[in-house]
Image (cartoon, rainbow, N blue to C red; front, top):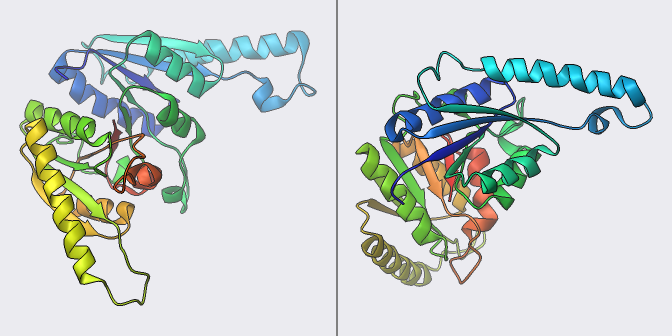
Length: 288
């Protein structure tokens, strides 16, 4: 990967959308890329139901909402994005489907969208539209659950944590993280969570753990050499989401990079934990 040409920002006019714009702005300033702000207006029947509002009234309500959305879209973060190459699109239909469709048609290099979930349990909630985009989009997807609590936006790429499961997507994830590190002259840490072999309360099988750690370390070094990445290595045993998110806190990471879609071999475990990592990460996550 050599650059970012287009970044897609699906927005809903929330505070988190505004924070996502600020992160994307850092990338746009660096790469001189195009930012596409898109708001998707969902069909009214998804809100009201076909029996509550029909005919000409339905048309009038939808037209009013479309006019309001267009005005809000044109004004959204106008000052923050002044001087940048910005295109604003109002789309109609299923939000997740339209976002994925637009990303494919426009050959988007990165989708940046905040996850949703409010209240004391938001750490365990991943918005349905974000989940669908993560599942269906072919390009990397940037997500941020706890952006309000993350480190200042001015340095989101100075400290990068790349988590790999040593499955097929690991090389792509590390290549993306290494490229980001070089572009922003940041520091990269490469982490792998080793599966806990014993049940809680059992005596740990130290010989097994030593052997699996040695294998994993060899694979990480081989991967690092293959990519040409310069990174500190972390190998820790335990539940992946907890290990990775804890490491993000300790290293002061501003961005976590993970692979998406890996499901092969004894190490193909990050796929089943990727949503948990995104939900619990103290900083935004790029799923590659």
